[in-house]
Figure 1: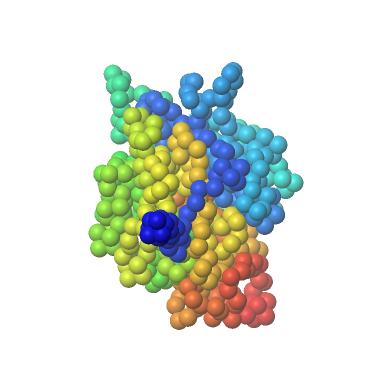
Figure 2: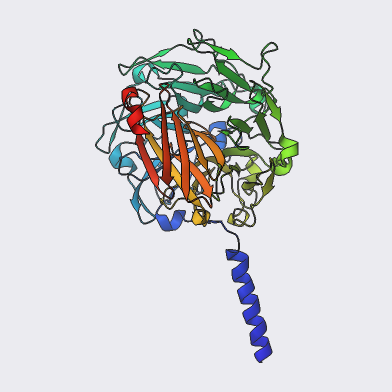
Length: 547
């Protein structure tokens, strides 16, 4: 009897160890937190907007110091299991959840004016008018939408012209960038395919059966209006079947470049040459070696090898491996997918939202990938796919830790957009995932804060207020890391604009160097760890006093 009890106790303890032994574990707390969003989705493979969407965002829309949750929905093509019983004329909308603290959210969509009910795709929040609050641009199949933040916790939708940035095509990825560093955020909008021209005689068709649509770069005039400058700056704009869009300064020359992930078409890296001119680096005479032709979906920029420049990761279609491009520092990239160990990670899965982020705060960027097929037969469980978490081994390689961190145990879903941020302010990065036709997931990071950390919130004065494009170099324990404030990475989504550094065992940050988009350089020394550091861009005349 005693022996049997001992055996039972032993196995009970083992089960506890198998759950708690990993330093970091992710728990889906969407239900317990009040985030009850269900993506409408679609089950008919011909309803492409419902199949490929949608995105999500972490944003502090009300300036109360914590991250709120925004989730994009899609229109309901017909009655489905997601329609509430007995409800006539039900039409799903996007959803905003206000962070109440203590791990709780309240749905406030209608009362703040964001109950948009279009065929939703992507979202991007930014302070385009530098008035101190986050405005919202939505991409949709058909009419995009633009919402001005009133500053009192509510939004007002602009007219159909949207200050010069109205668009009635099939919007996809979107990114706020200050491409000319004039202190006002410009807007790049990706467009997908001409869905109005359905291939004749086809019952089952795919993206390559359609023609693409032109993308657009809108210049912010600084007076509340925008101007289409796509052709004048050297961006052709078109017919690329664009899904992913992300701006970043990959060549460290002080201006934001653009990368496009295109579905069944060549991806494009546009180098910003300054003087309001872009060059396609994937043309024959400007090879950056980032122009693969696959089913491009999601994009993330990050310095995974801590060598001081931004590397690039792109997710792709089923049976097309995801690609990790290492920045060579000379304007070119090397495909290190195989040597880094990530080649097999996406084989057999359709991969979408993604992000470089330091989930365990060890000082090296890891990778998350949201996965989910588009085959209508896969829309009902168990036809989904498990997401992927790849740990940076700190030697240029990655290991799949999806099982030991609880990601695999979350089950098979139909992942699309994913956003990243520290919503509970405990020092580690959490994950928000949109699942097509299913409940959203809010994955709380448990244990990432066992290592030290430092988060920075930058506010521009001469630069755009969100400091998009700012670079931060941090040195601690002899190791230097670099981060850049970027908007529009992942897939149709937006992560927090705060900069997050994992510091391992370092108890003090030796040096922080901030290169603001205006060109101003700020240096801080001897900074305590485990805090959110809020910094305002100093006047150049005051920089000496800011050290």
